[in-house]
Image (cartoon, rainbow, N blue to C red; front, side):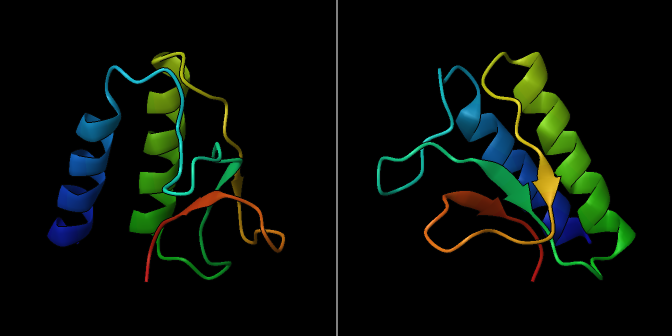
Length: 78
């Protein structure tokens, strides 16, 4: 759980000050994806990431349990 928190915090600090959430291929992320049976800690992290991005004015990304083929998404969890 501490590793997850640490990874999320590093990710959030890396995003601070950016104008958009851009993936490694240059496309903007469309959603935050977690497993349908994700533990509460991952669900919490997804909610925190969504709130952070929204407050930072970067993006309004929904949290979902799947991504369409070819869709750029942020995946949280194992």
